[in-house]
Amino acid sequence: MGKEDDVMVQVANDGEPIPVSAQEQIFVPFFTTKKEGSGIGLSISRQIMRQHNGTIDLLRSDVDQTVFELKFR
Image 1 (cartoon, helix red, strand yellow):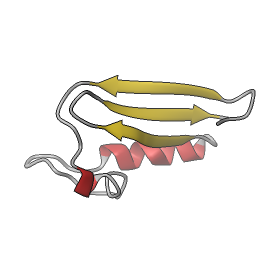
Image 2 (cartoon, helix red, strand yellow):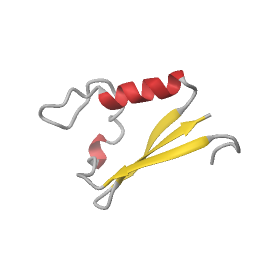
Image 3 (tube, rainbow, N blue to C red):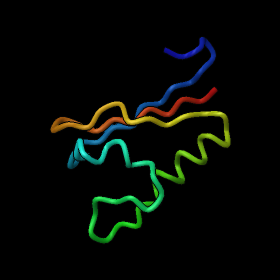
Image 4 (cartoon, rainbow, N blue to C red):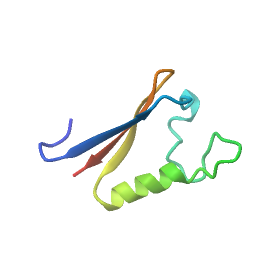
């Protein structure tokens, strides 16, 4: 749970779930599960959030939806 003045935004989609075997690696630069992906998007997103004293985390990824939480402090 965040501090009282933290702002949390959840972003979700209902596309293909991130495989469980890949979930711990999705923020590693150049890691990708796609044939034509560069694997840099989530790594850059995390870096940007950290530079602004925030965080980005994967909350869940299953057949229903994938949810990321961005926390701004």
